[in-house]
Image 1 (tube, rainbow, N blue to C red):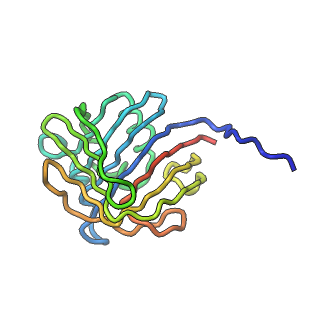
Image 2: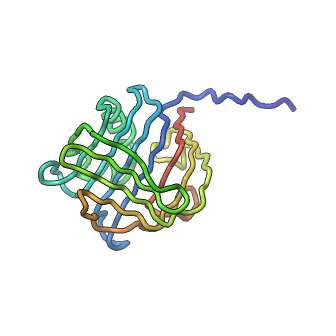
Length: 205
């Protein structure tokens, strides 16, 4: 039989890294803090970095009362992600009051430390803010090929590398936000709400 073409004919929607975490103090309690970080190599609005931080997911306020913010080095790209991606994710990232209150703030520094086998750290700074996202107790990397029924948008194919974290935390100006990661199911796989997604490619079939 002839080999199928090695070229995916779908339209690239966006590509990059997308680690994040959702924290609770108990399984039956509310989300106490959440974050998504994007290190983007391609979107229709360009490339760059963006940190979506929900310090108080249930609050409709932002600075100076709550760190419900998006730190970015490309505001057009950050807003494109908010409107075209985050808004289409079912659940707390799109449905929390904090989503509509997010304030866009230029970042001044963005770097990683640690490694991807035990502890991985993403640091993002802006004026008056230093945020450390820390993923500890990392699991074995898993390559995922997900069809639309297994992704949040329900309309894309997704290829990525997942590294699970069993102990993740968000630190804002030296203060650790409350909560811990919770068990999670993804595409029939037991994992947690602390996730490091590398090399994501979202494709419109």
